[in-house]
Image (cartoon, rainbow, N blue to C red):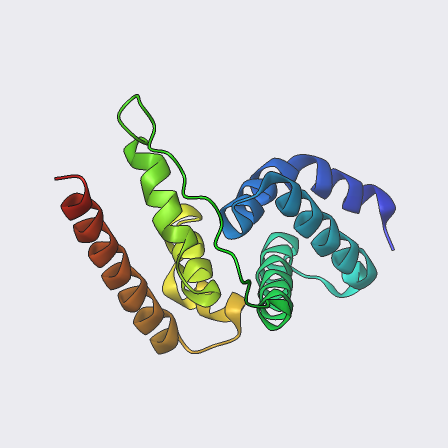
Length: 161
């Protein structure tokens, strides 16, 4: 294994990969953990990796998905509801924050597709390869995600009337 090549890759690409991990998790601490786990998995496969950035992105998405599935199974209903948040006195969140909140409510696979297609600006075929599915699946998941985001936007506008 070439430790120097791996270190150079980590130094040069970590910031961008961390942003991708954040967009998947919506939590900086979890994003750091996700990236660290993805890089550790990559280190063990480094000798076999042809395209490191694509490989790490795929590991990020699959690891995130496995975390989400584990979390989903671990949820238990609570007897008491949490306190309701108070609206921001400055007029609410900005459009960008509102958009990422809506993206955060998407199912894990749809969120991954949106992040890879629109934030990472990857073509459908590359997203399909990273997610291990067909391009048609990426297109349908993208369409479903965008439809949910449109509905979410309409609901938000109605609530703020």
